[in-house]
Amino acid sequence: MVFNKLTSLILFPIYHLIHRNIIFGIIHKKLIKSFNYKNFKFNLNEKFTPLKNYSSFLFKTYEYNDRVLIERNLNEGHKCIVVGGGIGFIATLTYYLTKKKVFVFEINKYILPTLKKNLKLNKCDFKLFSKNLTINEKKKVKTFYLSKDFLDTTSRQIKKKKNNRSKYRLQKN
Image 1 (cartoon, rainbow, N blue to C red):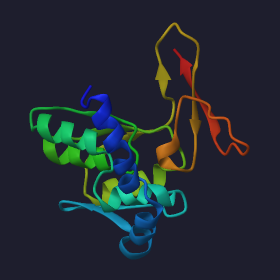
Image 2: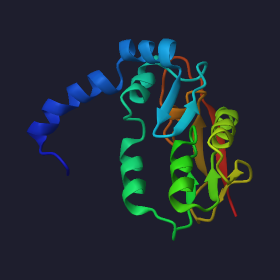
Image 3: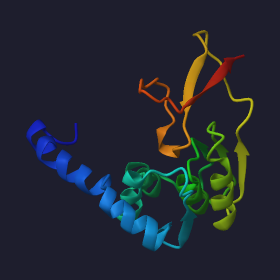
């Protein structure tokens, strides 16, 4: 555990006040409109990105843990597969750190146009896999619940009054 319980109790509300703040989200969505990191630019699909998630782009906390890990550990000697391409942020960083073609897997059909657009915008050499994804396990078929909100794809069904997720099943080989 990174923090003890007391530190977590103090930092958790502060983190969420900044990271998922609707007011900061409105500022980013209306004034900035894209996510910029270093020399890279990522377009956001305004229709499918909730306001509460925009503040993570404003404060550069979007995929912070993943970003730190790959920036510390990847270099030109590595070959990479990115599972869950999202908006292409991690795939773009991976391509530029390794200088090699990146294989990107994404099952959420709603975000594929944004993902492709961002990878092309940042001049990445990539191969995108979005169909015929399978798992080779003797367990039952894995179900994913897709949403137009690219941060909301999950393997857990969340019960709400209005379920706007569609099911996507990974098939056994």
